[in-house]
Image 1 (cartoon, rainbow, N blue to C red):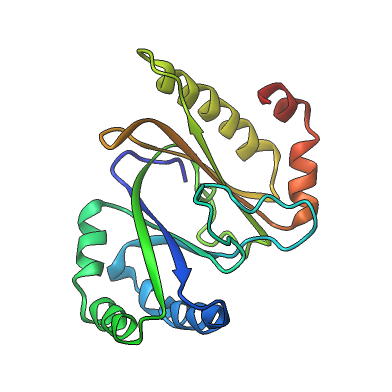
Image 2 (cartoon, rainbow, N blue to C red; image 1 turned 60 degrees about the vertical axis):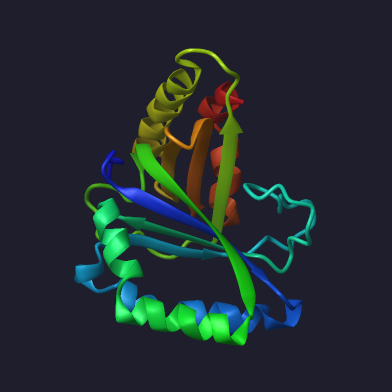
Amino acid sequence: MTSEAKSIALLVTIRPKKPEDKQKILDSLSSLAPFFRRPSTQCTTRSLITPATRKGAIVRGVDTSPADHSAQIGLIEIFTHPSALTAVQSSPEYTEFFAQVEREGLFTRELTAWYPTAGFVARRAQTETGPAGVVMLAKFVCKDGEGVRDKLVDVLGTYCSWVEQNEPTTLTYSVMTRPKTAPNEVLLFERYKDLAALAAHGKTTQFRAMS
């Protein structure tokens, strides 16, 4: 679907207090999937992300802290409206889950709200995008200046339209902003079917022209 200004994305960086607890945390977060699939939650996207382990992979991405990144977990949830996110966070399922997390003290988390501004999370004809083998989050910090961020969003948005029409194995290419809290920042949320899809994306003339 084309991104709409009214939707909201919650980006969560999860830091296990002990690296050995990472899988337990992933299993716990995955157990909430049936809840988020309920139409009443108005959650259109929920992706759990772990750092790549292959040689040469980029593992820092959005989080630029000096901590060990290999144990970190990323989570991105997109809702149709901020009120839907508020309702989910107030629900018994959500509050009980995080009350248990607090008691066990397994991890800390950092939450950031972003607003889809251009691009697509899923194509218009799709109700499900299918599983992604590779997820990327790229953050741009624009220089100060009137309209600089908006120009970047326009350029990325035009490119997103090309990707949507020409790269079926690129499942998501969504541009997000934080106008009030970080007016110079732009986040690009990308999902690919597999490594081959990512490689093909990076070899196109259009991608190279963007670099």
